[in-house]
Length: 330
Image: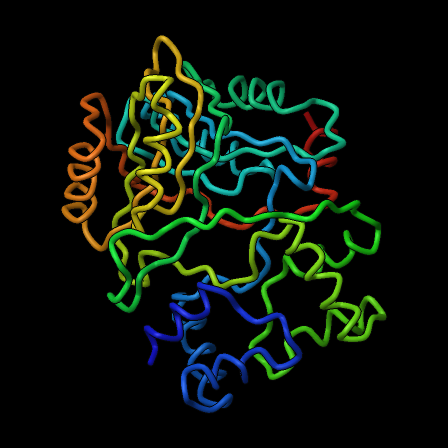
């Protein structure tokens, strides 16, 4: 049942008064059994957290993937400096000359802006070079590990229609609560509703507005990949002719093992413009899928960047004063 539970909670966790009871009913078991198992998986650090996953751009944040070229003797110190920025959610060492790869976001009211912030980090870390790789077109963002082994190799991507929304101060207060990891209790949203002085119906109505507008991508469980048995992740990078970018991006995004798929800019020193992040149990599994993707697309210029060390991985905390504090300190 453990694997079924993990897959179910990654897919979509119910935003209801007693969500664990709903999960239990789907799995033909009891709420007590689910609560006990979820707590065990959290204690074993297989479950990282269960919370809302928001669309950074729709919240007004500016973000980009960034790669720095840092000399070997400065790597740990550079990673530490980068990690201090509250807008850095993921930071990895990868097997390439551009060896430190991180995602960077700045708040809507940032005085420095994205590019100046990256320049400051480049100066502080003593990076020899850096490339800024913002998203030009997103084909997929959906991290779901196939814990059951039953998932099809390919999946059709749903095109979602979103309603327009004007974010109110009340929405922002709800976002601040939904981004927190929930407690493993019968009513995990009770604390948030009481803090905000809202009834359950009102709280979930606001949460669903955020979801229907695409501001919230989904409410789900995020796993610690390695502890969940997915020991390899490869950032596959592809040099795609401009006129085929859309076609190839959609094609690669259909592979279930691909969690993220984006078009990004290319540079004279970086010819790759399509990125597809692949998760597998072994490096061989990832290699095999990349070869299949190359064959299917007919692309010959591509690379595989494996992460060799995780410096930071956490959800971005939105509407946090830490962004202002960091800018005032530099």
